[in-house]
Structure formats: C-alpha cells, structure tokens
Length: 344
Image 1 (tube, rainbow, N blue to C red):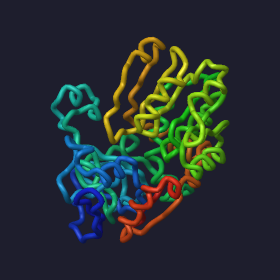
Image 2 (image 1 turned 180 degrees about the vertical axis):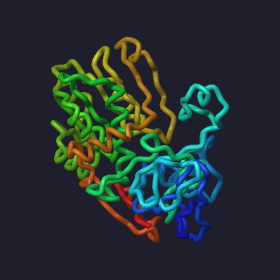
Image 3 (image 1 turned 120 degrees about the vertical axis):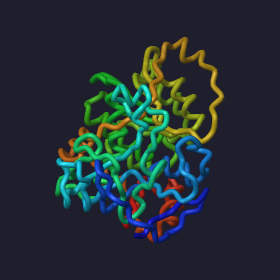
Image 4 (image 1 turned 45 degrees about the horizontal axis):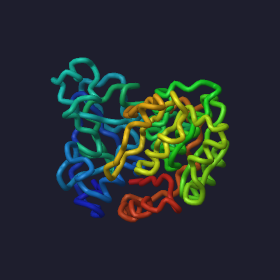
C-alpha cells in the first residue's frame, strides 16, 4: 500500500509499505480521509525532539484524525463488522502498570499512541490493535461525510476541554488561538449555551471564520492588546474560563492576566519551547490551571449529527496522499489553512 512516511524534520516521502495485519482484538480500516493535527505538525517541524519518549524512530507513519471503512475484523471482535463506516483511535498501553490496572490506560507512562508510537492513517490502510465499539471505534452515520468524520477527533478534544471546564450559562469564555481546536472549542461552548465566547488570534482568515462560526467577539492579537480588550468586555472582571489553544508563551501569560479571580484556565495547546513563568499570579488570583488530555467522541459525533457543531467550513484544503508534503507545508501557513485533510 502507499503511505506518507516521516523520516525527520520536513522529510515526508510517499512509499510502498506492507499492508497492516489484523490483530485478534483489532480491526483494519481502509482510510478515506485523515486530517493533519497540530501534533503532527510539531513533529514535522521539529522532529523527534517533540515526542522523545513516544516517537518511533524514522520511518513513522503519522495521522490519527481519520475516518474510513472496516475491511478486516479480528477473531475476538464481535460488535464491529466489515463494511462499517467508522472513525477510530488507537493505543497500546503496557497493561501492567498502576494506571493500566486501575482501568485508566491513557495515563500509562509506556503507552504508544497511533500515529506516534505505531503506524497511523496517512496511508491507504491502518490497523487498530484493540478495537471496542463506542470506546475507541465509533460508527459514522451515512449523512456525515468521511471528510467531516475525520474532524471528529479534534472536535472530541474540544468537547473534553469544554466539559471539563464545567461552564454555566452566565460564563464568559475566551479562546486563545483559532486553529482547528480553537474553532471547535468556540462552537462547543456556544452549543453548551454560555453567555459569551471571545476569540483571540493573529490570523485574519481564522478570525473571520471564528466570527462566522458564532464568536460573540473577535480580537486581532497582532493589532490589539487582548488582555485589555477582554478586561474592557468584562467590566474589568476578567473571563470566567480561558481556553489556551495557541501553544505559545505569550498566550500562556495572557491567559493568566485575563482570567478572573477564581477562574479557570484550560490548557490545550502544546508548546514548542519552554515557558519562563512566575506562578505568583496563579496563587494570588486563586486560578485553577487544568491540563486537557482526552476526548469526548460520542458527544462530538452527537453534535455533528444534530448540526449543533459544523466543522465542514473548517476544512480549508484537501490533498491526495501523493501530495502529503505539500499538504504539511500548506498547514504551516495560518493565513491560508485551518484544517487540511489528506485523502488516500
């Protein structure tokens, strides 16, 4: 089969590789669409330094935001059938550590994640080694396209972040960064009925899209001071919830300054460089800083099916697998791209 194989920073090649074999507890999926995630982009730009504990050596097939058709089913799998339209995610925990024994395999220190620790979906076929319906494999309704289905994974991250924040109807939420995750966070909070969602971003294209997707206020952080604007918009109280999706030191510090006393910061963005931080603000404002690693797939699919969230406008480009490198290079341009989908 054809696959986009990663060999180092900026080096992705289209190669013929062996098709994955089905495992007894797993399935094999024919990939129809796979999105480029921010984590894929970090690895593409910086190489193994980003994921030193989890990243495979050169020869990795990335890709974990995907949809497709089940073509092989392991002998021990009874609730998934050949021909099912699905979205899926995959992991390989050690099975022996404290967290695995406690039934929380995603906290396993030795876990291998699809597209990082073992081959992902920038390929014609992908193997899910352990497949359980409605846990890590989810049926895709016929009315949802494969392309939109591939956005369910980033949407699930947004759902997890928003629900973990435990918003109430009177909350003002600020989203820092209007890439794919930020756009999804915006829509999820709107679907949950909060009073106001403010989005800050430096890309005019992404700000225009955020406004079209329902943001109550957008702030161009390249032209205005977002902390001052948020304070003005909240009568100097600050935001109840700040969701940091940009993953740059400046936005981390902005989040600390614009959140209200006793408020919450949801940390979603992944940083490419260390942050110099004096935590006194966290203490004196009694802020809750909450890391977000998880996904709410079932609710994400429900939002898509009910039309409460619309991710189709967020797909700015589609590329064939043969042009995977061009796709990655385009994804690096925030004034041009939001979500890029590769179609084998």
